[in-house]
Image: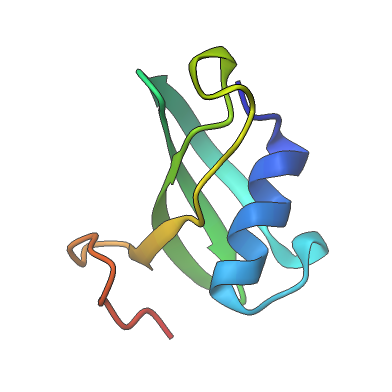
Length: 79
């Protein structure tokens, strides 16, 4: 399972902010996916991080994030 610090580091890169600017609001794991709600720069985002657990040997794919209320897909503009 990804720690909050891992989540902050991985989502910060996708959101274009520093890890210190990311606040983890909620996190749950389902299979090989970690679903997180984070806040950054006054906005809320929902993100999915695939991997990071025993089944994936700790490796992850880049997170997919979207502003809260928007659909999560790889082409969603979230800024």
